[in-house]
Length: 393
Image (cartoon, rainbow, N blue to C red):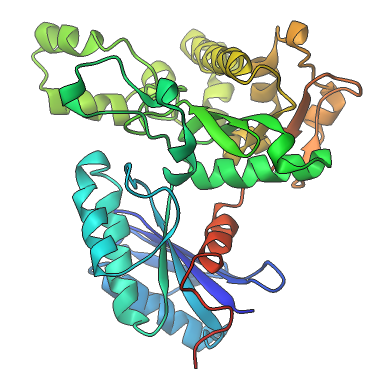
């Protein structure tokens, strides 16, 4: 087998992991942060590597390669580079071996993800220059949701607008739903799950037999659940109403919905731990924020229960889903009639492992499964046509 280098390039950062695909073991992990600023830094395997900032992504990736050379591990067994790309539109339903044509297609999709695809594309271009002999694979957040049926992805708007639901967090939903089937000891194609990816960004997905059949995010990552700074679902009529009332432009409203809404808009903080602290101190806005947050989750659980017909498991994942028992409990309150009950002791027990938190005999198993998007990207990378099973020499 071989090692895979996974790159996740953001607008001012590069997250990376090196994985041994024989053992599925992490060999290295790191972060280049604040690219373009004098305060830019590189953390390699937990060590703060001294730096005077990085002018651009190329400088950041060069610093990463220098860190590998100076501190290890060696990159001589790397056989491919996997890249996270947020939006693949309707064109990309699976991972793609990157060539100039794929690069151009990702660039054409920038209007669908103007905050994400440009940075993903810059990381691809820099890495292809740094590793010209290696295959590079684009793994798209939207690809897992290309199995949505037309009734789920179609918006009831004029056809000439040419818009539809795409969905996001696909690598996480794919990884976690597959792991859920493994924990249940059943074939993936026989298991129905509702996956709740709850982090600063959050989404829910209904997975029927390994295929996404509905998901909460839409054309953009703004739709669906309440998030750290994003509103989630809002009546579209709010936009023209606020524009007329306040004089804000469409771009200003869009920015507010993405950056100043969600928990931040309701409670003044986007970190759920801070929101809970404020609620415990008697802040009524914070208490309301948590009620709104979990009410929205319950609504999507009920929606997707109806879509799936029967549900084998509900799975919590990502930072909040994995680590916040109070939010998990509140999100499932009142769902006993649907066969969804959690065991309080199991729910509050601290663990970094995948685990069951429902009561014995519950009709629907409730699971907590740590997501591993980097491993999923690496798995999809090595399984892409055109990627060899051994590193090139």
